Length: 218
Image (cartoon, rainbow, N blue to C red; front, side, top):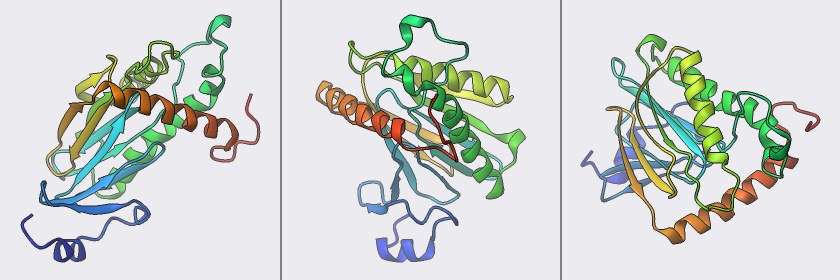
């Protein structure tokens, strides 16, 4: 981890399929860092850090302690576990039907990438973060994300070993894929407002961009 940045990066190429994610050297951490944005995921078996910033989004960090391989996803797509009441048919809930499908995709893609890299499903450990209600006037999309990911983990028989979800503030998460350790830092209130605006723009894009062959938004 103390090698010169360029030398370390040259010796440590990313796994196939992740070349498009930005990877940079962090002198304070002494290793490369990969930032995961909404709708992305990343898997590694190297000494590097995967990081993201979450508002109402949820990130799952999944790790195989035997093979020392782990990864993180970042999704902002709530998955209601039952039909919503009529009063919930608002602009935010209008995206939820897509959210159920994409939330599942985000988890499945991460798990499959870890298995492809040599991980074993029976060994996987899961940590979940995010799902904050960053602005009181916003529909609680974060709570729906939390409900979805907990339901998914239970249904798939995965082992949840840690969680830091809910509350009212944005979070920065750092995940170390070779050890499974995670760091969480709560951000200041100004970051909550900025995060809420960014997430609102992201949801609007989801309302118009098809996901995996979707033709219509019902």
